[in-house]
Image 1 (cartoon, rainbow, N blue to C red):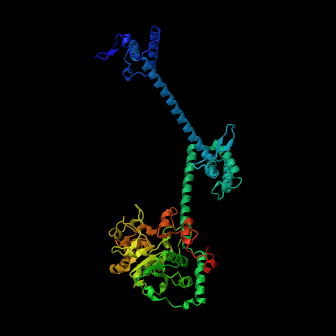
Image 2 (image 1 turned 45 degrees about the horizontal axis):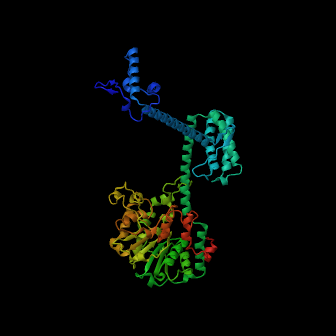
Image 3 (image 1 turned 60 degrees about the horizontal axis):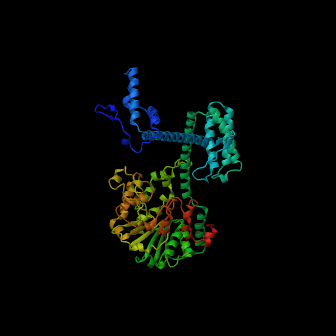
Length: 603
């Protein structure tokens, strides 16, 4: 068979010797008809080509004639091997299509049944009875009964609202009764083990009630609306609880625990009763010797300061060269001095000063003190209509912390005035722990900078735009929003460069411009970033690891390898709020065998 130039097919006679080896003729006489018949049947089973579809304009005879010609030409063009292959391909396609359809149906049925059972907490057994569908999550040991009961309560509340709107009072009462009983059965449980003994039976009973409710009330759009309303209500409740949590955390961070309050009281009483207040001051020779290693700690927390000093001395290679300058307030001066008189660190020198003795630190010189005397600041902190509820007034609650009112927090900007004869001072916060010898920091070349600190920016985090108000032109014209932030807590200050660059004057100028708190909110880090802008030398991150006071997911290896770890945040290590896995780094330097610690039950 071949086609001519016009596209018509022509037949040619074939001889046996012209056929390939794939042709097998068992009975040429009879099989010829069979092959032709099967070929014609197969051709009829396949859809015809698009060329032959449009026959609406042909007569009936022409259509029949054309169909016969098509069948004849197709049957003659197909060899038995091709026919067999086409039949096999068609069978494979049909089988594959059937498998895919069945898989789609099974998946759809599984999703639908799982959604119903997940929300209602039951399924029907072969006997027609209801049994609890025990939800298994990715974790096979998950608390499935507790989660199931919580889901049942959600569905019961949705159905009860629908029942009430339809005046089905009996069903409404039953649903309310059961979800309240389920809530009582759950109580404060956080796992299946904490559930009350009858909780599983309650879940069964709830499953039956939800089944009845579904039969009477189920309307997909209506249930969807009720669930959306429930979701919105829960989101609102979560927001309220979040505000309450923020308020309580801030309140707990500001509150002094009874044991910590006991310690300075006991120390102060003995300071005067035992005559320690009559003892003179230390030898000024070491205190003013610039060749030694000087540390500045400004704190009103005796226990925290003792940990800073103990950890520094215990890890120092030359304890006798360590000099600690502690400044506290009038209220805690006696207790702080008493502690270090009766518990002097080995060979180190301790100086305790009262900030009220710095007569030069007054409102005529200090911007912060002058602002604290203004009516606006007093109104901000002490206004009579200050909200007292847990959920109200949480905005800027952090900045109402009393530490922002304390000059101990701002004294870091007056280091040359406090220590006029020193060249370098290592400033330490009272919520840090020293784990390595810090004396190599005095050998670090700050490249003419004033402040040596560890930078805290990572990608877009902790950059200047987080701390300063760049919508104010005073900020946007003078600073880059992408400038990297750094941390107070462990800072090496070059006091010689400080005086040359008049750092305290820069601080005063910006503090005066921020009297209305439009450049930054209260605190010491924002004015520190401004004051030491382009004057900060970045130290290696291994010197100072931060976040132990707010981030429970820090790398423990980095913590253990750090020279200084910092509990910045609300979760201080001496509070019950502390992250438990970080407390041991701090508590190992607490003198638990000290009689004052034992009397105040600081365990």
